[in-house]
Length: 414
Image (cartoon, rainbow, N blue to C red):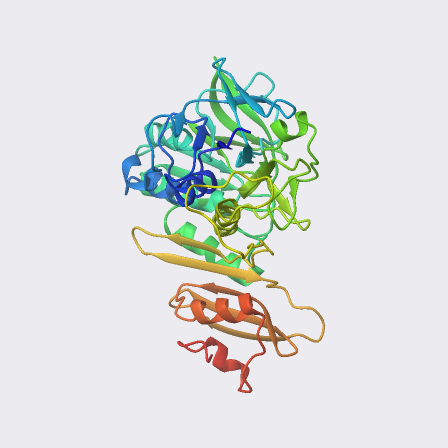
């Protein structure tokens, strides 16, 4: 049997897995992008001009060119022959296959997108997207960002630092409303406006205006047109499951996996943004890296019918039981602005809520307590307590018998 481990996807999850497996394993990492694996979390720093692309490169994967194959797109999985077929005509056999295909940007149903993206219109997902936007953004460039979630806020801030005249169009009531409560979202809005970003909320983009294939504006549902030299589509992401679905694997929202990150095929695993575990697709870096670490341990401890790397062994079989992930955004540069959110920031009836707000400093802290458990929180500005709060939430431990206000002191009261 072929002992090779083939990983499709050279993003953060796939590259982490290949590094963890190390040179003792026969690993082939197929990356569709031409770049070396990089830290996607830092793309906004590249767009803002603070980092060059080389700075966000991930640590190298052990092995030579046969280990990491860049610019190679997998197009079909032959499960019977245990072979991955690629767009360049090559085929790679596997003993164990790992899908780390990530996610695709969601393109909204806008008029003017029927023939593809006009020049000047980009998602904000890859390094190539980032470099293309950086080439367009200069002082006086009219930039419209559609979508005010985590990516949209990051892109708006970065483009403003480039000197562009930025408009953020968001259909929700406040920026980052999926993660933050209204008061915290209002502080994010004020922060962006202080940087010169024009923020439109509760508005719907209806279409793109373009001339000779180049974007000229974004039309809103009320007919108002935002003039634009470039447009960023930051409308969320969707798990990239096409390969898995075509191969007949079980796919719901993502590729369904169990506690060993195994799909419905006993020789195929999935990790990262494309994987759905216990009904959850995380779409965040921390769960993706944790899944990669668990799978690396599984593959090197010699699971039944799994390729066992040289020198591996051990009785314990690790399991992935889920991640309680904290969402964090650091808007650095001129006036660093930190945002962190976890759990349920909106209380239920009977929950205790503690808030501290400092409008002058733009700082805000809020925690939600249910019984003797911390169930959610939002922090902006000063994140001195975030470590202690995150540990209490992630561990689901009973809170100490102390006034709840202590949760928001500088040491978290824990």
